Amino acid sequence: MNKVFEKGGKLYWLHSTVDAFETFLHVPGTVTAKGCHVRDAVDLKRIMIIAVLAAVPAAIFGMWNVGYQHALATGTDANVWQAFWFGFLKVLPLFVVSYAVGLAIEFASAQIRGEEVNEGYLVSGFFIPLIVPVDIPLWMLAVAVAFAVIFGKEVFGGTGMNIWNPALLTRAFLFFSYPNDMSGSQTWIALRKGETLVDGATGATPLSFVADGGMDALQNAGVQYGTGFWDMFIGAIPGSVGETSVIAILIGAFILIWTNVASWKIMLSTVLGGLFVGGLAQLCGGTDIPCLYHLVMGGFAFGAVFMATDPVTSAQTECGKWIYGFFIGAVCVIIRLFNPGYAEGMMLAILLGNTFAPLFDYMVVERHISGKNKKVKVA
Image (cartoon, rainbow, N blue to C red; front, side, top):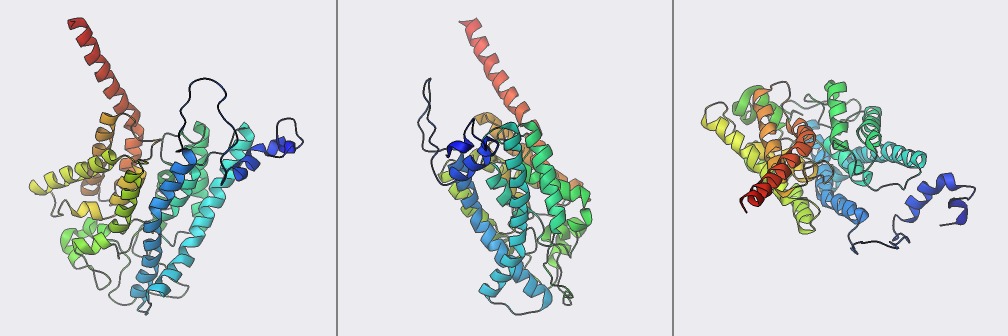
């Protein structure tokens, strides 16, 4: 780094910004001079990049699906490339706004505190466009990102100190502040100015049909897409940009688990929690929705793989991870079944899980300490 940006230099106040750009593709020159330390090639930057790469399949499929849903809803013809290009042009502004607003606040906060710029927002900024409707007004997205980064992250001290997942806080802010732009049949289809849906087509998601009229409503959902389990598993249905294809999300899950970036215990326990509550409700006659359908509808799969496993806001103990994941899956399905005003459930379930994660860890640690003390007394 140029000496003018180092301590004592004329432009030292830009130290954090220059350091962030200089170390983006290069290994920092700082080393540990004394004390115990671990030499490891896996640092925060590499973990964040792997998380972003894992979400790329969902993003690519989502871009194609945006164009595909537009073609179906408007009665136009589009091949694979045309559908992808349409979706790419629609989704790209979401990424630009997400990164521009979020990184500007991150850089400003680092400069004010005199600290290095952390790479944590690289992941949040990539996830945010994947969990919102494609036609969300950009100014709304900018306001929501600013709220989530400032009040959900920076006030707690920045990356590694936040209590709640910043990407989900963005979605929660949008949902409660601008509900008309986050729900409804027109929300999930990208339309050009003056375009209208053709007869029989709909922009409603499978989850919204189920919430309104159960499985019968889903099976009579119109001409736009299939309504079977495998149709939703593939993901060619209306929904948030990156949440529809379970196949693409599973590719990301494999990458995260293979590289040890995310916990497979949280993913599996989230699925088990959803299946347990969904299956229990089905056996008791409280719903006609097969429990497996909850795994492929809405943002369940994306939340279980990418959101619930956030290493900062999730449980840290091994036993706590099982409790934390099961809690999220169970609460998600409970909300879906018993709260008709909010069909999704996954967003609130994960935010509640983030809130109680320290409590789960505390209970696990206290139980372990209590067991140790009993053994000592017996001895």
